[in-house]
Amino acid sequence: MSSTAYDYVDGNAAAGELSRIFATDVTAAEGQCAHCGAIKRFAEAHLYMQGPGIVARCAVCENVLLRLAKVRQRVSLDMRGITYLKLDTSQSLESSG
Amino acid sequence: MWRVGTVVAFHNETATARTITLKVPDWPGHIAGQHVDVRLTASDGYSAVRSYSIASAPNSEGRVELTVERLPNGEVSPYLTQEVAVSDRLELRGPIGGWFVWRTQQTEPIQLIAGGSGIVPLMAMIRSRISAGGTAPLRLLYSVREPEAVFYRDELQALSNKDNPVTVTYAYTRAIPKDWPRPPGRIDAALIANATWPSNVGPTCYVCGPTSFVETAAGFLAGLGNSPDKIRTERFGPTGDRK
Image (cartoon, rainbow over all chains, first blue to last red; front, side, top):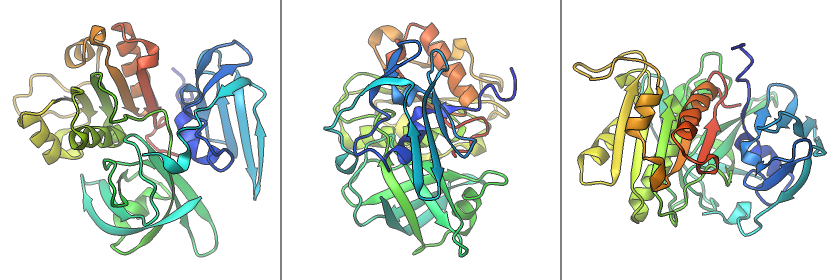
């Protein structure tokens, strides 16, 4: 295996950055890959965090689901690889536990 | 939103890992398995953020325990494992994550598989299961370099000695205790088959560790008939560095 084969972590790891944007936890949400149609939790995506931003790829087809880039106080978010997200708003970040 | 926690205690788990206990006044409570982001800011304004799993069970006292492993060339972990002192203040964001969690309402058998410091969020699940009571039986398979690298050693020992619903299996990768039946080595299919719940009892499996370890363990669990949606994973990345 190449040394870069395992450079990803789970989508879980994006929860902190995404909590700056969304009021509900996105990582537990179910979403559909716009490329292959796989339906999985965002937490199951492959997450690459080595660069200046975050790239999430589908765990099935490796197509890009989401890109998040930060430049100083501005955040750019590209979610064209996700057809939809189903969020559970009963589990808001501030009332968990 | 960043909160400020105050260090109230710490102790070393191993030669390279330390548990830090924080009091966080406005802590909203957490679920076992969640993590926090910790932000350290230097005097010149440079800041670094790292994710650390919460080791403590949910509690009502605003108490959050983090166990941090020191990484060579780390930016944050050397400070947290060597320099942090009681009454220091740390910036925290969290609790974070709603997927890699065990909720006290769950009654199905629990299968935990830890690689190295991947034990931390799983320990929160064990502690949560014990403190909440309930009926879910629990098995832990803990792959670790050597006996001296085991986190929470005395607590795990006590849990597996007493009349508890917790079964712990250690798998050592480099060095074994005297008379240990299994030679040192990585986890394999036979070990996973022997040490984990049969898939027909429908366990929810939680696997946490370095990425390659998680790939391997989750693959074996699926091969034994566990449904992919019952296998939840948390990968640290290639080095165990949680960026």
